[in-house]
Image (cartoon, rainbow, N blue to C red; front, side):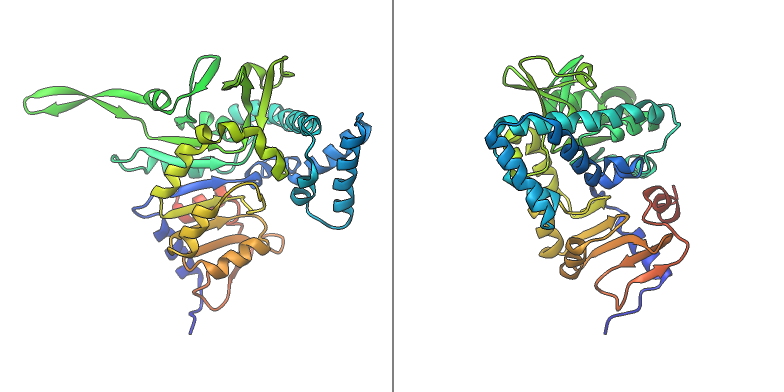
Length: 365
């Protein structure tokens, strides 16, 4: 018979997840929406609909876009409706509109986060996890599907070293080996009666932006990062690399998939604890198979912290024995769920689904 879940049990069991094991962290749009709801898919959908309604489309493009609108009117979700877009020029229009929309929001909050006038709520959690990394493994693996750079600004503000595989100056190229060397330093250590110089790496985050980023571009068939173009129109011969909603757009990064995600895939294979922040498992383009296999079939530990749950999360909860879900209930309450217990735990007037509050109350930081 399933046991009753109490607050004491829930806190203790969730705290145990973090003892002696480092999670692989995947955060989604929910973390940006915690700064401004406008980062959400609903706002992007309305923006795209408004912009393309005013745009000049050729007959093929207009037919494809009309099919998207028709699918939405029939109740299909935005991700699925966008699968009907195949025309390359229409895809490019969508990428430009999407990147302009997100970059305007990114610009609005970049300095506010860097100056400490706006809080990215997961910053304290990442600081806690990085500071707690063991000396034998000084890398916290973190992935996101977000295009914006709010996390990077928050890492800078919090003094958390991070790398993302790119190395260089104004224009950076993908080179994980050189990227890791950038966070290395020389330390002095006793060696018998002498002092020996020892190469060490700072405790840091390895960040994988699996759907591209506002500062990621293709130029001369090469994958680069260029912050100088972050809020600028892309010059001729340069294309911003982001994967927008709809499976067909995956081709945009297809040629760079191995370069971008090889390290990401390797990191997933090494982990047995997965932490999801503001991630709703909505994106059909993103392959979460390896993580889901570990959660469901290998009984690895998992924790989902999200404002709102959905059918996909609820279904996963029934399939993964060691998965915990923390989400909002009512206007200011929290629900904590795990399939081993007879019923969810409801906490009134507690907002543990807010990552900064979770960090303070559960992890003590």
